[in-house]
Image (tube, rainbow, N blue to C red; front, side, top):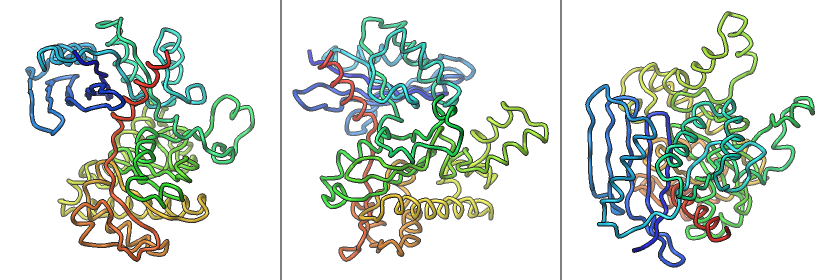
Length: 394
């Protein structure tokens, strides 16, 4: 019986999972999937390492599972899958925010849960669900070691001035500073970049993690030195439903106009971004297919903001050797990559249109001074690596 690590990524209405077998120094993917709609009409799907369907289960509309029930179903299916050929030895979790306290993968215990609970106001859309998944495992399999891997940890290498807001020192001391997010994605890209472009891995690269949540990160020799996200996941680029960078005066104006904190939170996290601008959808695929003028405007704004942030991050790096597209939009939307690259011609990016249409991995010409790449991210594998490493040092 081979040992295996389960990776869980909990959202508000879904619990995604991946399973990796420990094969010597390697981690071999076995299966992945999710339970979606856990607040009503749940659906379970699973696929093998080659993305072939393995299982699907649907519950009646209106039936709820919660994260506890979702984990119970995943665990039950895993016991049956493969006839017990694999034994779970640990569970790794993606945890959105560790603030200043957690800068490394951490073994879960009661103290950990209490401390992360205090951080929920920083990441209200993510941390409650991350904690719900951890508690579900504790309730169903308390003997399993659990490891929390933080999306902020990669950015602990920020220079001091990148960490700072122009606020009084007592607020900085209280933890109000720039942290950056999507760190597990950036960490994975940094780990595989040498396989694609040694110059980019050693030099100055901007990685564009473009998905429903979107951000960009400046890597200098593989180290994060700046990011578009800061204290929370709201800053930087406009996203599926989040505002991105917003003048704080807008918040004050809304408060003075009668909106309370909860209403503003809902506005900036759930009703803005591509959805708010377009009035159509938060999904880039829907916007590209739509004939509504405001759908096109939302795409224009998204691309424009990427271009502005790319210039800012290149300035922070003091130059630019490469850009890397990753995550859902970055990996699967050639037209967005095309527009971003053409907008970045002044930075030395020369697009190869045919390579871009084919999905890369290199989408810049051989003569391009700044190379451009499409590299699929794998946050789950990164979490599994951290989990195994922490188990081996325990």
